[in-house]
Length: 287
Image (tube, rainbow, N blue to C red; front, side, top):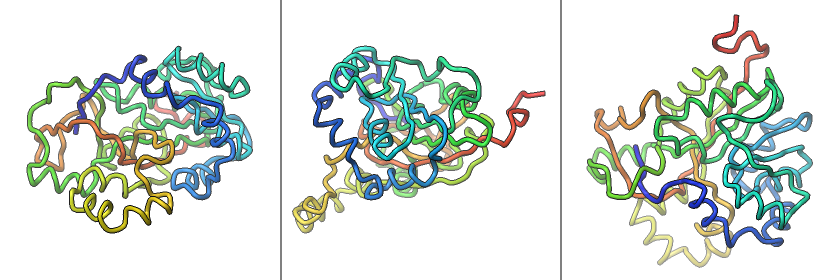
């Protein structure tokens, strides 16, 4: 499944984060209670207190700051130079630097865990090079925690009902959405062993996909849910979900092999957790 919208290039992300990068943004991140967030709980459970951790494509560095606030040694790389300069100016103590997730400037087996939230789906030729580089930099026995947009039961049902476009919309390609089996296959081909997959933020996905759910939210429970912190606009919400595709992506097996296209909305999230085999010799192509 393909989303079409504004290109996910440096200018896009610089514009997206321009007004978010403030001292208050980082103060809130450092003080965040990760046990109260779906993604935060998964990260705390999967990441070890020992060793260094990398978020590849960290944006403004929210999760770098939040996880450092929780006592973890996390650093981030980001491809948008202007954004990195802005982050460094506003929060110089935060270890965010310019870097390319397709060619990370570090030796093999450097990090105890590799984090990537809503990044790998933006490569039109497929996410494989990102995953291969992740496997290179994660030490044997380490973890990769990766999110991509999820083509789950709700969206597959909508596809069968013909709710998505059958031809590419006018806006250019933005990202792919994947089924869990597709993405797990890609992860395993890169050299990881799947530990777990987790669909996340179902509420946000339903707000995007279901007009009935939006009506219920706005008319019946909106005020109470917003007071309880369920607002779709609240929180950092990076684009992403656990699932994938192989080769040049586009065909969706769940929809009878026809390509599906959707105009952009990036709220449905999930998480794939994968572990490196215990030795480097187990990496594909080794030996």
